[in-house]
Image (cartoon, rainbow, N blue to C red; front, side, top):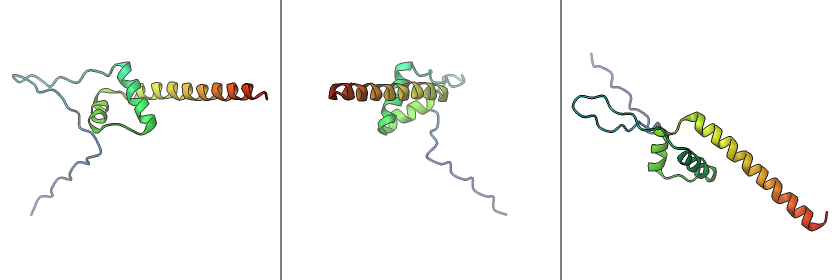
Length: 95
């Protein structure tokens, strides 16, 4: 009886890239992302532009809670900035 072939893994899920281990040591996990890296990733994702290499690196180093917190803060900042600009325009128009 032939054995079933394993299903190929989907290419959409990024695989973690660990540095190579030396002398039988376990692989070293990547360092966590710095706040500036998280802000940069969220900023570029607002525009829908992100290079593939950077996206794969972010998938390994950036944690979901970091993205949520920074995304909410940046979204709130964007909304407040737009409200301020609209109020300034309305005030300048004399309404």
